[in-house]
Length: 304
Image (cartoon, rainbow, N blue to C red; front, side, top):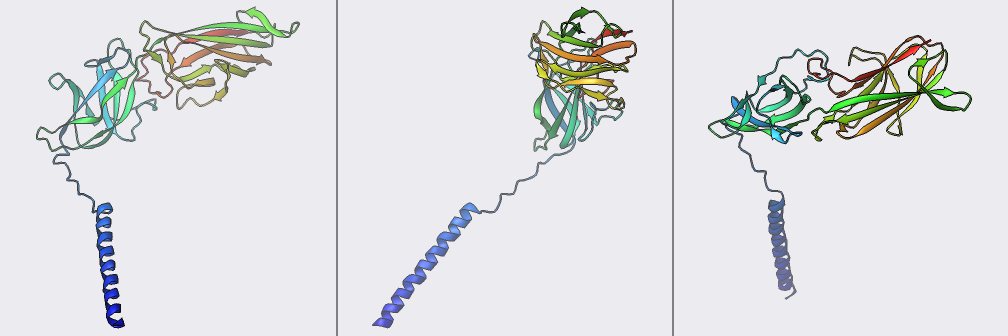
């Protein structure tokens, strides 16, 4: 009787083990199913790639006066003063498609969009884009992203005031029109930048405020919009074409804004010369062929 009872219990255990294994296999199949194989697109070469260019200042799509060029990824058309690389393809506007189009193969590219109007308004821009294959017989595909934005440049004016240090009062309270180091040895120069345009969506792109280096005249400290600013000396013109002291402004400046740079100068055996401040906007673009705008400047005479 005991042996029979043992065989019954053993069969129950065996059945439980089998059920456990079956359930386990079902769970494994549910969560660890073999990946679905994705069929590659039928066409990956000779594609017609479509995209749109949006003017964020006028809220319209650009259909003319634009040159859109495709380059291999890793190409640097902006932060290169002299750029000679030839594009892989140049887009043209297709009124039937209602979009810009270019003949390309599937892959990743750098897209350069620049203003070629007789009166240019928007900054050159670069984008990393992707072209995917298609099964469609017309071989037309949309670029990723399908729409790229361009930003129009506002106007900028610079004004300045100069206060010489008054040793009698211990304050910068003498208004002067130049920096005469025979009369004074310390000055506070305030530069005011006014951003204006009838279109409030335009901007001045972030950049650097360069000041001429004059022997014996040193900027000792400064602030930009009330925040302490680092004044750095740039001695190498081989990259951006600029030298002198500079302060960086990292945010784009919008229409209606007024920005202020205060710089304290001290003279010690200074030389005569012209202290010029240049608003070198859009510092990410060094390419002289793409910088169609004129950087705004203002100057102060430094004399004995």
